[in-house]
Image (tube, rainbow, N blue to C red; front, side):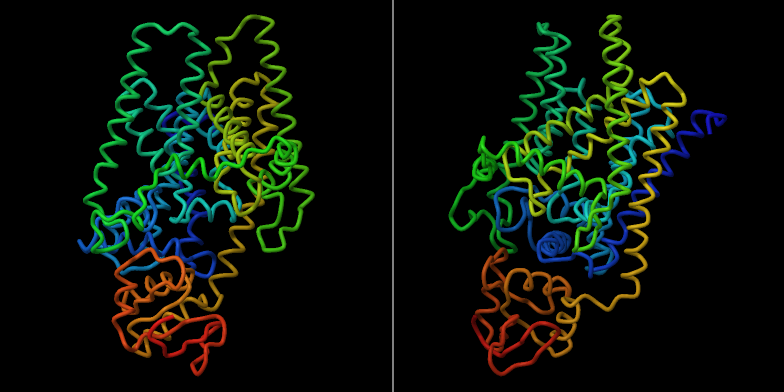
Length: 492
């Protein structure tokens, strides 16, 4: 489509990028059966409480980190639409779309690519496999926001106040945002080994802005409801935790495990990100996809090494700057992989800590397409990544096909049964309690028997003489609903 005027090609590319992200995201916003759980329900309840003026959430209820941006963005939708997964997911799906558009636009502006080539390079993000797309659309982990913040940091790198403000908000919501700042500052040190006074002034102002915004947000804690409605100013169970303390507690540095971890990074984590394993519970290997990915990575990496070697011999370093944004994404993705594998075991339950590794294939494709002067080579890379994209498209289509005709989620069956029987309150384990409460729009208040995040629910269940106990184990005389037993008891 090179015959199109640039502005028309840009419009086609942005529309295409938005449609691709919507296609892979919507199943997780429409079908509760796929992955809806109590963690997501907490953010939905926070948005509902905020829209009704009942609470002022700052962080996720019950913990001193994970800034409640999701709930604030979703609150307006709860003010005009019924509570539900679709209402909760509108804003997070839009953030996914906005991030995709930002990546494509930035690759055109600072990556040396045409708009459609930018879409081709961005396909590893635009069309991530369903398990990864589920991570990015889930409201419980704020997983997509670091992608957006990393792009914004690049765009704002010469605007220190806004750079520092975005870094502060991003770090409080998800600390992985700091990878982008580290690469930008490190690149400036590499290009300008001796900081000039304007450069020092710029980064000093950015640091001051970051600290000011961070402290301003934390200063709101005495006015925020930290454990649900009516808990304004209370500490989390009397403990004044910190994000830094939470991070250090999660770090597991073991030099003896570095080799196995980096092996798992390639075999497990990267395979999941690129759809090399099937998206079902069996996680079956798909050799054809593995070969496509391997050849794509190898070809792009070899071409980049050849291009950089040629530029070094000719001392043509400025030529490499045409792909500046692609280099940036590649560096952020590599840093994310190094920190994830170095700080934690690489396991499926920890995949959210390494999602920014997706920027590795995006960066590789972007740099190759921008710098390789051989038209046939660029077309081969674009064709290969497009061929790979068929796999997540088929996987996402199967989600639509399978879940559009699937029976309701078991949690939905339980919630509707309790609501129809006039049950007002109950007790259940965490992963049941808040999901049921959200699904019934708080007509049924279910307190948690283990991890309690909303104090008002605990007090309400204690005050009722007709509270029921909901358990997956037989609990005496009671009714079986889906996989749960519902028994009349006041307390767990």
